[in-house]
Image (cartoon, rainbow, N blue to C red):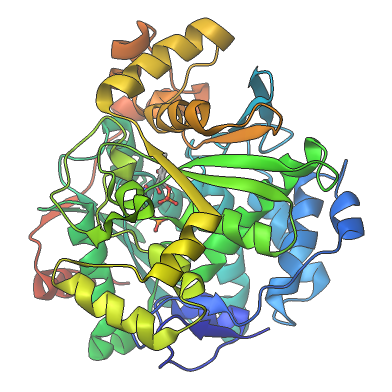
Length: 461
Ligand SMILES: Cc1ncc(COP(=O)(O)O)c(C=O)c1O
Ligand SMILES: N[C@@H](CCOP(=O)(O)O)C(=O)O
């Protein structure tokens, strides 16, 4: 199993090398050279298995011989042991043929824990075997950062630096990043928005002297291992509703396009998915592009679903790679045009994208109204990101195909918006009840590459 860059100018790597490398050296993103498939019988055999065993069978074909079966099973067991629900990713019924996939029972209450806990364990095994250490730099609009810190804190062979946009994450998200006492994790509050954070992380990868000097690694969805770990819950949920005999659709609250791209990978592996629906908030660049209006950056407008306040959606590059039939020079050209504001998608690629993805958007008012109406209708208290998706799913779903909507975060991560919409204040789980009393530790930093690199160099162990 080999991994290649979407821009075609970086070396082919194994799974482990791609995981430890992060961004390809040509600025592209690693993708599997061929997506492996599971037969109908293999998919049917997933029925009734634990989440852990499903993860083993779905992910194993992507790993090649990088990890032994015994190692990989141990890694999976440790990754999900800290989840607070026996099913790990339980499904709840909202309405006839409409289901909510709850992805917020991990340690930091967001779907990021599914992949981050797993790659934390994968990194540890790989780095110990290589007797190596790395510096992880990450960008977050709130959830990736806390999940990364939780997965890597206290590890002796990793330092973690997370850039988050100052003043643009929820208080719970910020405190989750600024209160871990472990000295190997660092929260950097950047003067800018999430796109600035992500751009500076990519700049660090493209500065080879810095990259090689600090042995830079990435745990954003730049990292293909992150995306592949998210493929698993598409299988577990679809199979529990009758796949492969029965088709299902998914609606995914989308920002950086990692989660919905994992759904695309599941479909290419053979999971019978009818529709993959991209749900955006008022920052709807992806929806507009999928409607045929080209991909053109605007200003990011802060919203009540802040984790999706994104203009440069990193994994859309992977979607374009497949839509352009693996034409790496076409992808490189588009990404070049994006630097000066945006690009138009060719007719052929647009057709491929619209055959794969549907889309919709929810305004702030619609998001608040959905939180309120869903609580009244089904008793489910949604976080604003899940509410965006539920609103879009209601518009897009077909009566005869089950729709699975992804609930990507716990409502208690966004209590102000949830209380405003529903009148109910969502409490944090007991294990986090003292979050507001814990001491915060963070560094304010300018949106300046040299200043960020300097800070990292001075603070690695
Ligand atoms: C709660 C929540 N929902 C949805 C998303 C969007 O997911 P993706 O960036 O994979 O599209 C994010 C951020 O990634 C998030 O934190
Ligand atoms: N919404 C994300 C943004 C980063 O996404 P990633 O999947 O590329 O790590 C966040 O919560 O940080």
